[in-house]
Length: 221
Image 1: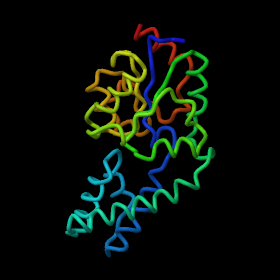
Image 2 (image 1 turned 90 degrees about the horizontal axis):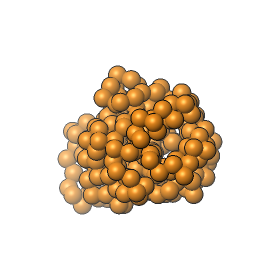
Image 3 (image 1 turned 90 degrees about the vertical axis):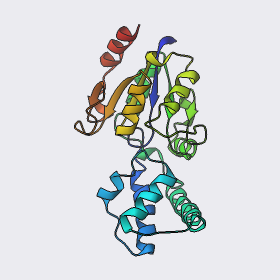
């Protein structure tokens, strides 16, 4: 087991793509409230908590709601989202993710999940990856959202490593900022311009080679 280095994965946009289901659930809510919610609007909700997402959505539609009504809509939105999640299977694992996990296993490198999603365990179970992670840090175990580094710092504890021994794979600006603040190696997955603050960048996980990981091990140790 290589205990000099560990990996922390964000879930959405890195291992699977549930953004489309969030979008559908938020869009249905906006439709019910009588305004348009587009895919471009949905980008504003990436890596953001459910409560904050609702506030952003309501500001887009210029809608004011009581706290009680907000809670009602949050429960409703989550219920609908969960219905989508329960239909997920292993075909929804993003390209390159399985191969990367296999590479890490072969090199004896442990990895954990660091996600804002409270549904992370359920999603991992649905796609058949739950048992592969050494630990899961999700929305149920953190009090501060990214860009606060709390989720990743707890991830480092689960790996029994110092933050500077950890590598983070992220697709959101807030996640890259959190990793950088935690003094971890940040790897952006997705749009290069958006993720310009990342230490390294890949369009998708299919580009991450075993040699790249080995070089990082050398760099950290």
